[in-house]
Length: 472
Image 1: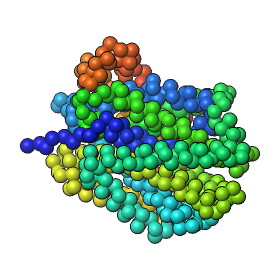
Image 2: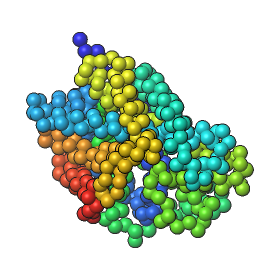
Image 3: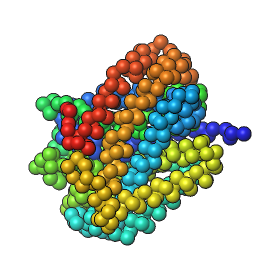
Image 4: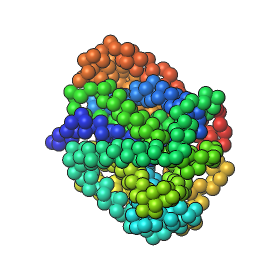
């Protein structure tokens, strides 16, 4: 006899858990810099449009499919396939994607934790050295840190949805918000911070072009954890009396608010200590910004707050990033764990052990691909350059596959499950949804232009990443 499906204990718990999956490293660093480089407030406006006009319907589709099927992504596609042989392939893709994303995200999370420990040990000066990062990622510390991350995530997931994921989200997400607001208040008191604020909030529409629009849509799609199977899985844990549309709106608002607020911290901090900075010099890579650029900014605060004060601010920031990374990592790993539990009828403990060992093994290979093992470092050559195993995982499973997964869920919901069934699921817990403008728009968008846009993004990403050809 199948055990009852786990559920979130409250609507707040679901929203915080889903927001935790969405709020990640890209929100805190990548988004503010992309906004600054691409028109400031104009980019924010375009980003918000994409969140609510494109991402919100896809989010609702994933949640509704998960809640209706009461299964993981593979089980969901099989449920709606009703014997069709091709749709389960999309389910496997939706299950393998978060597994592989957890691999590289786990590596980045252990780097964040390593920097946090270094700062707490009084080593901020060393972190500001350009050579430190390269030495750190190839040191023996990474193995112990990887084991520690695995233990933390394992403990959270072992307790299940309500007592593990939801409880952790209720602690870490409010803590993240408080820490972020505290840093914003501190940074805005610094000299020249207003210059960064002005640069961030005053729109420059002259910078808006097709490339910027494409970047804003990609940022919005990736930021909300779409295409990773997370929301399908979390949807299967939702109470049938909960409003999917209302919950999805709150998750989107929370994620966007965190990204926007992070900009109020990052850009003023950068301008406060380097008023003449050329934003084109800022890398759009969150990894490069966090581990090579921002430690220099924090060290520059020594003249204002002293070395101890600068270290304290840096420690708070890295704790903030660690919470964001950890909540995302927990959500990502829950997807394959749920898949193994459902498909193999294993206990949560056994499924977690199998999935955790697999992710840890692949993560170790990625951690060894930065120069320690030559074979992993120069694993493949494509796009005009040698690529490591880490590069390959990021390029394939984060930058490329997510729009394809989003395209597939749109087609499945609109044309396999049918719009009338989809609407009935969304009306559960939200009687006002029936006949609403949101219902009409969602049906139109999911069945027409959203899948077309996502397919074009997927094709362009493949051509750009692997063949050096950009259609935009």
